Image (tube, rainbow, N blue to C red):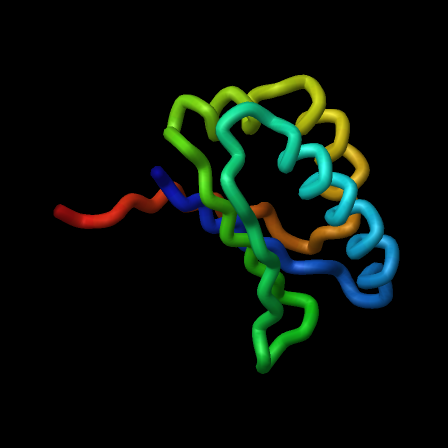
Length: 95
């Protein structure tokens, strides 16, 4: 299993619209093959700074979702609401 950390920063005054659309992205990811679980966390010092931690069965499953047309279309709605590029880090347990 791998974990994917997605870091996003929402532009001022777009929080409500972002929340609505980001839920849609997560709902669609849930049905993607290999998705295990996910949660979204908010920076306690900056409420516009969000982290999504998603568990995937394998990196191949994550890559398939990440490169999918479905995610690309959903992100096209989300990207204009962010004031920075999203940062994605793929993590695994150390041996």
